[in-house]
Length: 229
Image 1: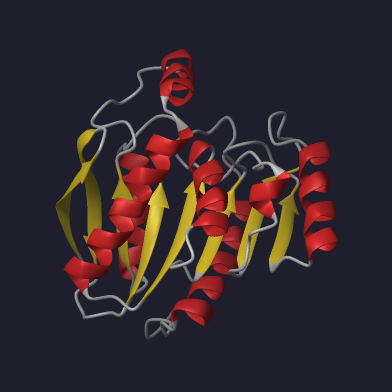
Image 2: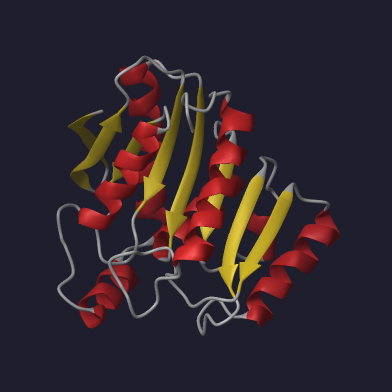
């Protein structure tokens, strides 16, 4: 597994992406969108895990180098980021990933704020082949109804932000528009996948969600499981 930095240029200025690559060549990539903290060690660790499973993993820095010191600053950074600007960075990361690494299929995932962008990207970026948003807010219905790629939405029953009411609205919209969407809900809190936060981390739910997401990406991005996995 190798790591490197990918330079990205957008209309709002330059930024970078953290990249983790498997030792062997692959034709599949996963775009990984950060939590509202920024590109921290946890996000880099998830990228490493994807690379160990045979994917190029690219985590674009939507904050252009800023890293939140606490939840108040994280919320401020998230609120100050225009959706259009975040989406432009993701589109640029996708284009650079395809050009630089010669991949054929790309999926997207993200956590918390990253879940917002992962689901919206699945609706608005047709080049994507699959999506796995974790506990991110739901886009407006006129965006959501555009969803055409296989999508696995991960939620927690005890999440006060992406609460069961919001998740039920998503399920109802999926039925209404016959969307290729599966929702899996765990008896867990917001950010239950984050193993650096013992106050919310749920190892059983995280392990099951990781297995489901890998199954989704292997099926739709055409990557075989590593030997012994």
